[in-house]
Structures are given as structure tokens and as C-alpha cells.
Image 1 (cartoon, rainbow over the protein chains, first blue to last red):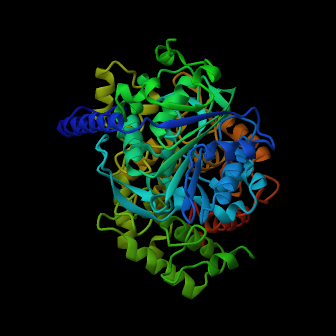
Image 2: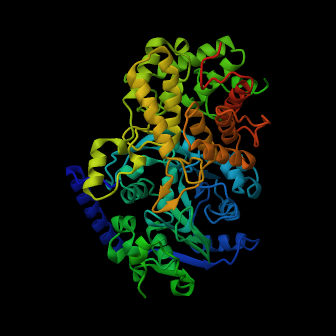
Length: 321
Length: 288
């Protein structure tokens, strides 16, 4: 379902290339983005302290701010590695509250299943997170605003986007560390597909596929500039992700303000070359994605690398050591 | 029926209904009105709801999901499920005409030709026209099922050949998208060589749309629906499963939702389930 190369595509492609180049220049002048990696062996009581520790590494000032946590909630199966783990989401909620945020909401708009609250219940969110319904927004059914897409990567000029995400002070992407059968990897940037309202575009949000998956990920990344990423990499998914893959224990939390750098680091942890991931290449140049450009805090990447199984069509994405 | 009280009390001042709270949307408003038809309609509430819907019809004949959206979408099928004499014959005919103009992009000749030129196969799943959620995108199971149900109501008023042709195409589309396990998911039964798993809610709504169909595929579909019914953890999904099974004379013994009702859509759907259990299925006809 890739698009044809028309004049608009050429123009937007050029703009995107220029933007990416500009971005690279700007980035190279700025201090390297910091990405923290923390070992977290299991979803147990210790996770609360580990999440606090990984956030403290970034000295986020969220006092008085409205924070929205965006997990990846996909399927009804609590035993699988499909969804962001509910205890991880709760630990993050508690950490941001302790950091003085005025309001912390959890918000998600699943891509295939319409009954979001039933899905969250079955996935363990109601049990793990007290008063879950009071602090949760179903982004598929949220109030929306037509938002111009300034990234110019896809052929979409605008999208209806949920006000809860548009109006928050900090959007915290809480993805699962997973392979993806269309994009190679799904991490904090791909997680933003859940912001696009199914109530407007349907289940799946097929308008994004027709306009180009990688390009739409890049557009959404630009549309939400106030982001932070915290990746649930305790148990990830390899093979035929993001739904039918196999659980893979990686035992890490990965975090940072620069979500591109976070995703590039997560790719390396999975043994995937970030330069092969289309949406990362769209928004960042080779130099920006280079390991040497990213300031690693905590564990070094090499100490936590796992060679996630890749589908045959993605084997060329394997990171060469 | 005690389910109707929370529905009536959640009506917005503008006459429409929210999903749970907040502004009015087309989908819960249609469900609330159908639910009122299934019980004794509250005259004032029903009329205000209808008026809200009538005001939202767009110049192209369709409906948007909610007033902030300037695009007619799949919810037009839901509005067309309401009796024509309630929504207005002219408005209803315009809704049906809008539905007839919609088709999944993947079944268009441009896309199919392009696929062939690129060397991709154009299999059975691309050879039948269904309905998309949003214009300009591919067809999927739920919007196709609802469009089939709406057009089957319309064909009783107007036997134009295009209606019957699109209904038949829609049913073929559904049969072609059946998952290997017998049920339906959102509409991607197989991707990259892997079979997709079916969902209870889409299995139910597809079976409802396929009522009266005679296909050897239905036996496996009904078995899948009965499996889902036993494990179902969603009131909405169970509602559709009940309606789908009942449409094929496999009505479950119990008429109880397995989880709380999550707002107007679930409560309304279960009023419609209870009415169907008593022989008045509002998706398949306009019972008096």
C-alpha cells in the first residue's frame, strides 16, 4: 500500500530531507542527547524505585505540569508481552506524581479493538492502577482538533488529534520493546499511532497506512514536540511483533527526552541497526543516529544487547558488530 | 428495562449523546435512539435526539462522527439503521446514496492494476467491495457489516439493483476476510504469511450481517463464535456475539453481559440484545 511518487511527494520529500538535514546540523551543534539504560530484572515491587531512578537521571521538572502517559495497549492478553505492563505504567504514574506534576493522566487509543476499557481491564490495568477509570482517557473517543502536520513527511496535510495529548505539558511515551512486522521495530515514536483517534479514522487507523507508515510516524513525532520516552524493556517481543511475536526478556528500562535517540538505542539493544529503520532515517541523519552521538547514562548498550529474532524480511536490519 | 435510565440521564443538552461523558457523537446517539425504539421511547428525549442527528447531516448526505469533524464517515451506516420515517425519508435516501458511493480503496481498479504491475497477487480478499471506516482508505469488517445491515433495511423500501449488488458484494467481502480460526478480526485475516486471530466483537457483527447467507464457511464461523462466547470479557463484544449467533439460530442460553456496561453504546446494545432475545431484532428490521 505504498504511495505513488507525485509532485507533492517530491516537494514534501525535499522539505523532509532539508528538515532532516537542518535537524542534524542543529543537533550536532547541541549537546548530545542523553539516554539512560537501567537494568530492571522483573515486574516486581522493586520496579517502583527503578522507574524513579531512571527518571531522576534526566532531572525532569514537571512541578505543576499536566503529564500524559501513553502506554501501548493492544490486546486482551495479560500474560503476553503485547501490552506495556500495567505495573510499569503504575510505577511511572506514581513517579510523576511524586515529582510534583499537577495532573498525570493515562491515555491510549488502541488500533484494532474498539472496547478500550474492557481491553484495559483484561490487560490488568484496572487491577494494577487504583481508580484507573478516573485518570484514563480513551484517545479514540477524545475531543479532537484538526491539526496541521508541519513535518511534511507524509501526504497528509492535517489530522484530527486528541485534545488530551495536544494540550498536555509533557507527553510520555511508554512503549514496549518490540519488533514490528511492517516497520522493523515499534518503540516510542511508533507508539504515537495510538494518539490518532479511531473514533474519527476507524480501527485500524488505516489513513496512516495509506499515507505511508514511516512518514506518518515522522509527522506525528513533529506534531508533539514536548515528549519524553520511557521504554518497558523488561520483557519485550521478538519475531512477528507487535502482536504475534514471542516474549523476550531484555531486563532494561530505557529513557530520554530525545525520543529519536531513545528509539535508536532500543534498536541497538534488540540487535537492530537503527539506520535501517525508515522513520528514524526520515527524522534524523546518519550522524544523529550514530551511537557515538548519543550520551549513554547508566548501563552501556553493549552490556544489555540481545539479539532479538527478526522476521526473514528484516534480517538485513541486523546490527553488525 | 433498567438499562434505559442511565441512557436517558446521559443525554446532552444539545440532544445528542456522548460515549460516556463529554460532547455528543453520532454513534452513541444512534444507539440511544435504537434502544429507545426497543423500549417505550421517551417522547421528548427521542425527538431531541433525532433533531440533533438531523442537524448533523452533511451536504453530501453522510454523517461525521462528531460535529468537530468535517468529513462523512462509516457512522452514516448507523444512522441509516434508524427507520426512514424517523430520520426523514429524504435524509435517509441521501444517507443510502452516500453509502453506495463508498468502497474500499483496495478494490478500486487503480489499486488493483498497480498491485499487478508491481508483481503482487490480487487475491480473493481484494476482489470484493466492502466499506471503509474513513473515505479513501481500505474496507474493513465492522464498517462493511454495518453497511450491509443498513442497505438490507433500505432495500425493503427501494429495490434498486445497485443496493442488492452492493449487499451481495459486502457479504462476499466478509466471507473472503474470514480468519483461519473461523471468526473475524478487524479485517486482516492473514499478514506476511501469518494467520491473524479473530476477535469476538467482529465475529459477532460479521455473522449478524451474514444472516440468511448459505456458505460452507458459516459452520466454522459459528463454532468460533461459540468459542468466543464462552471466553468473552466484554459487554460490547458479547452483545454482538449474541446477535450474530441468534441470526443463525444459535441463540445462547443466557442473556447476561460478562463485564460492566462501559457507557451509552454498551447499555444500548444490550437493550437491543434483550429485544432480539424476545424476537424483535432492530438490526434486521424495523419492528413495530
